[in-house]
Length: 161
Length: 174
Image: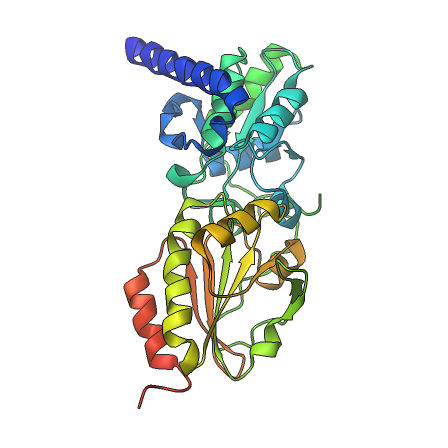
């Protein structure tokens, strides 16, 4: 199990390096990195995360890495916009946002623009932060989309940019 | 944030797994149910003209919320474009509402696929009118009287959608 995790992290690291190398050539923008490449151990389920938000006095940094229009419609209470990480400028925005954070800062990433495996943003965001050495990183698993898996469940949201 | 404290936050998810989750404080607006009047809106098309949904009264409208970064959305639009050509004379009007943050990539996709129907730039206000467009694609079929007949979310069986459209056209083939 540990060996498998190590292999999976190595694969993610190599993918991230390749993405970084391709960025100056403008090739990273349209490459789809499937969300299924994110290790299961680094995922957090919506119900669990909603519970954390409601029971813990100290909140993690919550970053939405998808569409700004959708963020304005509704986002997780306390979340910040830092995307879209399927594009180079979005990756840069995320990089800028986390630049001053300690590597053990609690960070939760989410998108939910599309069904999980079709999301263009979440895996590049995870890969970037993972390659930067963030050790307390979780990704919110939204199987269908943010509306179905978070908003309609009645979990805490806010509106606006 | 202190590392130990931060880790405790994530640990809390497991520790409190039996605790009930309280509903959100923010009010929820449900997606408009079928048989309801489709909420009217006006948005700018890619060439800067105002397009109002109610301007298509008398036609069967396929209202498609999409975005260029959404794979399943982009997979659908060539088919919608072909339907506009095939059924336009019988009263079908496809209207695309892009939920992209800016119009440049939309223009690019519009040209690439040579879309045969108008595309407008949507925003959070239009999304809210339709109960929150918080996951794409979402399409509505709107009757010539302006009522919502069908709602489709996510990857849809386009053959079935086409059959439904063919059966609802206001001017069927003789």
